[in-house]
Length: 196
Image 1 (cartoon, rainbow, N blue to C red):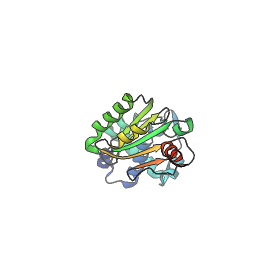
Image 2 (image 1 turned 90 degrees about the vertical axis):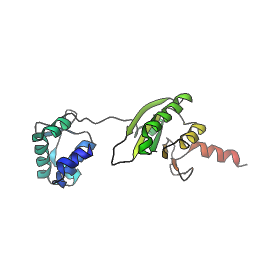
Image 3 (image 1 turned 60 degrees about the vertical axis):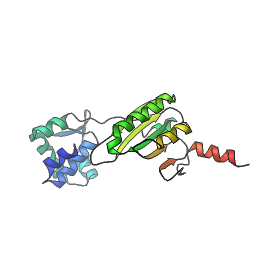
Image 4 (image 1 turned 135 degrees about the horizontal axis):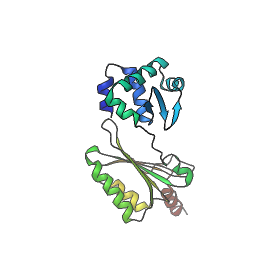
């Protein structure tokens, strides 16, 4: 999608900024207006949040609607609801896994297979594999990720980084140089067992 925006907005950097914001947030453009699903979004608020004047937002909307390929895309955009941000509030863990681009499909498959084989209940899977961004896989699980699964994820081919978001309060403990774990209950348990 970013290549499409680059092609159509290469001479309009301010309009591109608006178009990228609309795309990234799933805001649609229809009949000269911007919508969040069926709710109209005020142009003045969009301009303020994006950091442009209202005229730029209006020109972007007009340009999108008169450019047929852009009109087709932007008329169908919708935000995707996700449990990623609310999962820790619900007592669930979120695995945020970064994979090598050339190993994305295999890594995606390997992680899901590993969770299935170890009986880890998956609530939601969300993934992004855009050309300009790091390849990321987000998996919301009900419960706690077993230590051996955690270790096996890190050993997978194509693995780059794992961040584990947990419902715990202290979220600044690190397990290793490759993985950031915001409060790892497994490490705390191991430390408690090791101390007399």
